[in-house]
Length: 258
Image 1 (tube, rainbow, N blue to C red):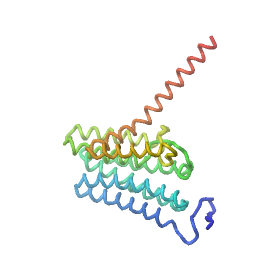
Image 2: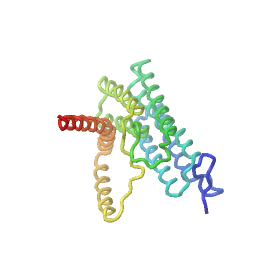
Image 3: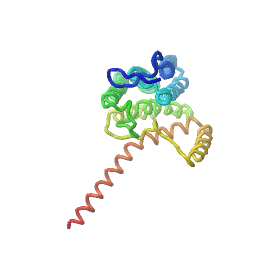
Image 4: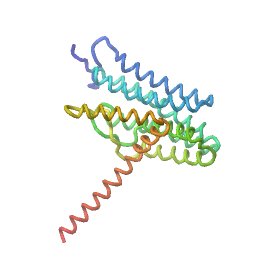
């Protein structure tokens, strides 16, 4: 059956099917984000952090399933963005506030609000620039699921090593401000939405996945935090490397002219 196109040119999938599977996965992501909020309010910070990670997993699945089943649509993108604001904006902000920022009073909840606001701005820019439906291999600004995952894994890391007190609070305050900035910055991050393996590399990829799961299963609270931290740092480090490479190239060109 041929796909129908709406007035904006986006595919709406087969006639009579209103993107049920991708929308269901998006709804599960929203449910996990809402459960994270409830858990944080009740003081169950471990459950709240895990729920954020689960929400991120389903958020990654909905887009991939939509592409695989050819049911990507403008409705799905808008619904996904609204759910992302709750699951990866409001939920991690509340978790961070109740976990470490509450003692700062007004400065604490303003930091949490800044995180929500920058998440909304990040999603608005993502949609307005047309990145939601393209095949780009990079993102402009830190993706909000990655930022939420960084907050969630930081909570798990602190719980695992029993980090508390002023040290934890200061680190989280800096983390929230740093993530807020990176989400609305022009720093580019690698996208894994369209990662494909072909030919002989499929077997190597399978072996790598098995090893990755083994490493992840050893101490998830530590390995997830390390992986998230590496991804968050990859943007600024990559930007710094490109800047230095550009400066070196300009110096070499000037020397050649001399």
